[in-house]
Length: 96
Image 1 (cartoon, rainbow, N blue to C red):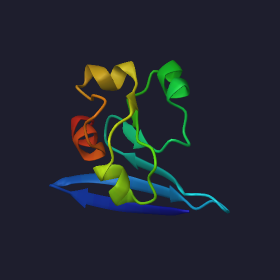
Image 2 (tube, helix red, strand yellow):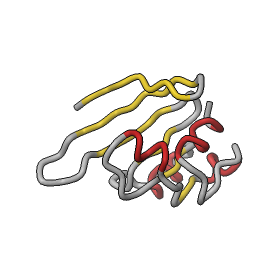
Image 3 (spheres, one colour):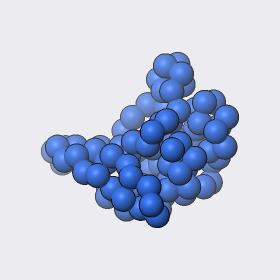
């Protein structure tokens, strides 16, 4: 498992990467108000828990998460302006 401070465009995010056997890694980037997660994590559960979250899929690196297209969002993320189709970085900036 790796935890890194990611600094992009004047923002600081916390990146969490869990390497899994015979599998792409589990990736999560955390901002002040929410997070962008890879497809391993469950968006429905995040919605039920009432958190600010968005999901990207097909990612293998933190850069992929930042550049990847948001595929789904919780209602709390949507209330902050996070939308399907924007980049992970755009979403994270709205969660700061």
